[in-house]
Image 1: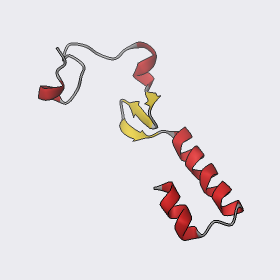
Image 2 (image 1 turned 60 degrees about the vertical axis):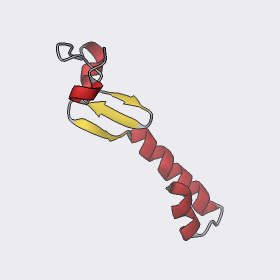
Image 3 (image 1 turned 60 degrees about the horizontal axis):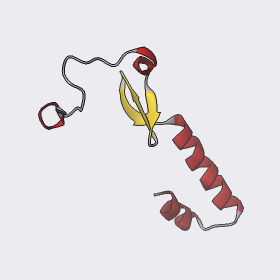
Image 4 (image 1 turned 45 degrees about the horizontal axis):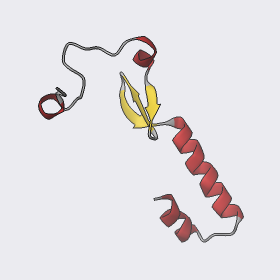
Length: 69
């Protein structure tokens, strides 16, 4: 049974993440690592590319802010 209701995590208390995942991994735009949760680098890069693309099209700055949210 998943321990999410008691510990906030779906990992049983005796299970540790090992192997390649010990360095961390990206999932759904977030970076999961021993240091904690962060926005993945690729997510930030794609956001910046989208802002640049909208700016090149002449989109108003206010509209870019709405699109990025």
